[in-house]
Length: 271
Image (cartoon, rainbow, N blue to C red):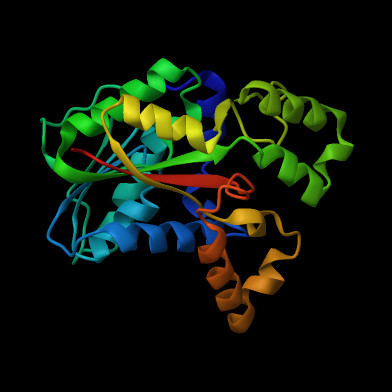
């Protein structure tokens, strides 16, 4: 089971709607866009490990992929199964409770593995590498990994752009994030997230390589746009939205700015 504070955070039920609000909409669109660049057309077996309430799993099922969802939280599995029932022509192949550190799938059983959440909350490097090794084990040769991590600078940018740094508690947790990547919210202050690890791009690349992957790219998902205080006003204008997406594609892999984002997405391939 996840740590008590992490479980309490996700049992609030907000994950189901997170990607439909505020800059979560940008995270969703950009993550989908990047995944689709690399995916071969269906049929293919996709394992969404730590997939929350199934937003990405359900999307891929609608595209024709065979998708199995695994998550630690019973609430998320319940929400995903309910949503799957609402798309009866493209349901999930399965959805069940499971742990990214020890997956109940045979070797070489997947074409694609999504790790779009577990690495956030594995605060020890050894556990993160173990989760990545499990992903590598269950992939077929040449199978693809998509691994999401939170940028080391996410709290700093959030605090600067949204004014959170006026709170001394937020300033302290930001200083800790910048020092060693260990994010904590001991007072469970709303909006300040929960126990997590925040990565440098080179860290996740090294962890994936240690787990046996050939790293093809690490990309900034939202870039600085994810911290815009007037995001919805910008996003709701179709001209401005497309302008923003075009510019994010230009800077997504630039090492000079890649860490100026909320999330990083690393693409790996099993040899």
